[in-house]
Amino acid sequence: MKRFDCGSLVPGCHWHTRADEDAEVVRRTVEHMKTAHGETVIRETMIDHIKQRIRDDVQAA
Ligand SMILES: [Zn+2]
Image (cartoon, rainbow, N blue to C red):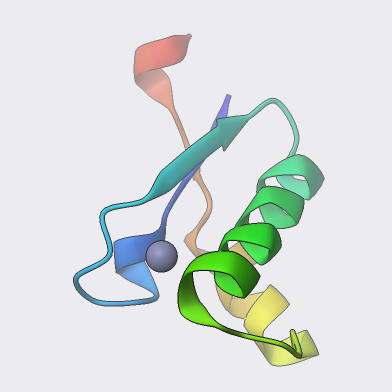
């Protein structure tokens, strides 16, 4: 499992997501950015920032 904590990108946000694939984590995070943080345009740099912060979720192994 892969895990992304929004707080690593948006300080103070406690949202996180987990998925088997990086791509799915990114997809869910992009949805979260749009709905929770009002991001209408998701830039390539933001995708990179998300990918850089995806971690292996050892608890779910
Ligand atoms: Zn967030």
